[in-house]
Image 1 (cartoon, one colour):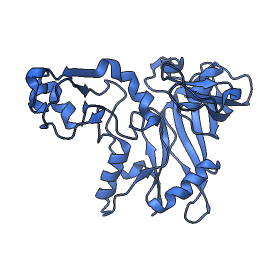
Image 2 (image 1 turned 90 degrees about the vertical axis):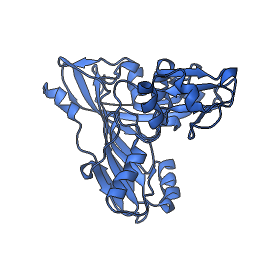
Image 3 (image 1 turned 120 degrees about the horizontal axis):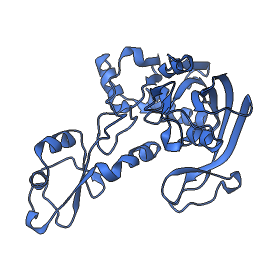
Length: 320
């Protein structure tokens, strides 16, 4: 699974996994028979159908292979909330040509495979949609990632020849990504920016570091990287503030961490201290929307601006 979503999935791991030890009496038996000795069919069937069985840190493709004694089978069950299999339609496409495709990603959609599902994600669903359009070559490559509950513009490549060009665009900051954010609290300024370090802490969770620590080696072998976001206040009510965030780097949970660090967590982002209710309504996902992406077209070099439809949660500002 992509590192960008590893922390999103990790929160479910501890209590959603079923562990089945392979005892000596199971030596050489098909894995499926070992599983049936421990797990009922109603639970087992859906997990196997979605590729949720793992052995030795690899997804099991053949459940009839002989069981290796001393190992442990891991069955990953899906989360019980905020999880839905993408069903992509033409209305979800923000932009498409022979080189690029931009999807309006929905809340609850994973962009890449998860431990419990090797098919129910955006990349696979896009291939299905392209096949339905009669395209023989179903190549699609995600050029960046969005968190599970972040909606909006998701850029994809339709031609591998442009991938190096797009990587250069991202590296030199030529891809400008603007987000709409609904946060709790009142910002002290109409515009403000955060320029920090970013990386994983000892417990594996994403966190911010002082800018002076950029380049420092972390326990997991990675290094602290720069994270830079600017914010502009668009609208305020007594309960929440609508911001436009511009990303100059693309770190995991960057906007969420930066807003939480200044006491303005996203509405619905309970992981980082956000409220779970607004205007008397429960909020089950963080209010963050990738609204607009601007870039030079990788094939023609002409300016390209791609927008996603506005998110439904904007209605919360009017109490709708």
